[in-house]
Amino acid sequence: MDDQRKRILIDYISYLYTTGKSYDFIGKYIKYVNDFLEEAICINRRGYLAYKQKNVEMMVRHPLMCNAILDLLSFLGIGYKRKEKVVKPLERLSAISEKNKALISEFIVQLTDSNDYSPHTVDVYYTSLKKYFEYANEVNMDNCRRFIKMLEEEKYSPATISLRITAIERFSKWMKKPIELKRPKIKRKLDVNNVPTVDEYDRLLNYLKTKTNLDYYFFIKVLGTTGARLSEFLQFTWEDIITGEVTLKGKGNKYRRFFFQKQLQKEVKAYVKENGKTGLFAVGRYGPMTQRGLAQSMKVWGSHCGIDSKKMHPHAFRHFFAKMFLKKTKDVIQLADLLGHGSVDTTRIYLQKSYDEQQREFNKNVTW
Image 1 (spheres, rainbow, N blue to C red):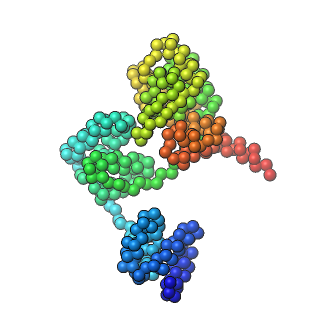
Image 2: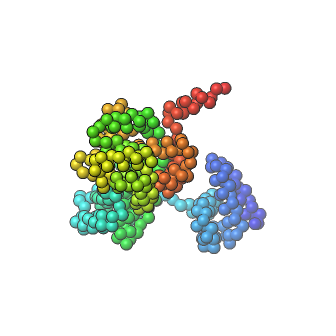
Image 3: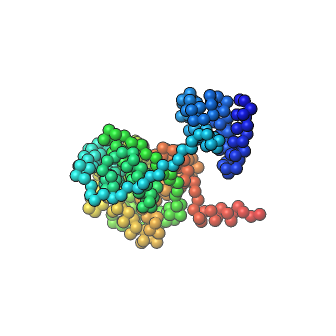
């Protein structure tokens, strides 16, 4: 590296330390800029493009490389800096075109015919596409970006926007014009204060045991000892529970195995023999249970037991199972497998402690 380029590197490093970036970030930028200054044919846009073409593999594996070099060129005033493209939100159309109504219908029929998607997922896809075509007539990258901008301006949550994007991407793939969109970052969180305690769980089971129809007792017992998602829970049969395990297709079309507690198997076996139960497990007074029906029933049961309604929904008992399993085993890896998580990072949220647990731990340990 000649003296002029050395001087450029020194000046650029001095500038980096005024940006407030982390030392790790600055270190990476210095490495990429140093490599560029050593190898580039010239320090300008032409040199950058030639260097980029020569180092495609590195660029793919280290996306910060291009950002660092562009930042250097911008600092020198001899290159260009990528500008944020102004995205204008879409405006609502007068109506969805007949053509797009027909396309949505065809797409939904295809989803239901394949049996790869739960009714809830199909409903989300339908709602998302209907919303999209209320603002755009065609699915293309520009319209999609503007649609997302509109959702952001209307204060939709990152999770909802992400669902809308998934539906549009799946639809575009079906249209054989695949589009990939950037999703908003979603911070995974779990309000551990809204998970039933052991005392509340036992109180609920004891209450449901007093009922003539013990089905509801078993509903809670299964939810609390399997960690099943509602869509998976609704697929269980009485025979599965007696057998002790079952393999089902769950979220993301992934198959996973569920185990049933020995004591639960014993209780169910006796109950089935006495009452002639068979087939689908989660059946209510008017047929197979729905998400809304089960949630409403659970809130009624909870009110009789003095349990906060925020804790009385099916997913709360998935959280309950996870907290109890971790308390007993401390094995996050095995829990991730049991819950059907694709990443252990997703499972780590169950390591959080509730307010009461934090307070107890604090008072117990902070004694100095």
